[in-house]
Length: 144
Image (tube, rainbow, N blue to C red; front, side, top):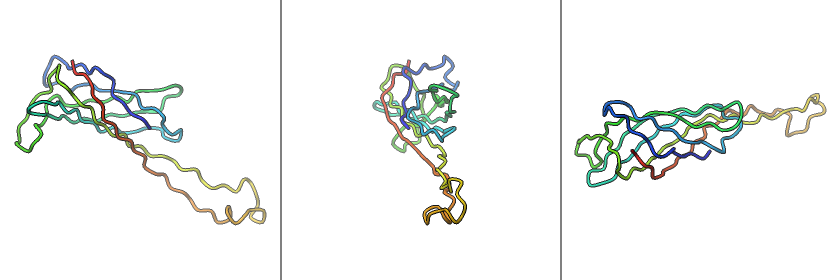
């Protein structure tokens, strides 16, 4: 999986409204049907601020599909001061996200052979459980 943010991100006029975020998720394994996205936007500057959000991606019937989500416009000042602030337009912002998805594993098969015809590799083959796949990305984006 390869992730990205669409840029610029447009802030709503209401400072209490959630901020929509999205971006492409490409090179997704064909066995993955959906992914959960956790993301933060970090506003750089003398009092760096970060806001957190969530999103989702669903496998399209054909072609590509963006992940979509929201972040809060209200966030915490980095540095442990306990301060809070509001994401502002025109500042340098870094978008950081992680996609997490369940990936189905291929199962060993007998290829329609009877037990007598199977090789040692296919005889007594064990179930292979799904695995969890993840991808993290960090990019500079514009906030307007």
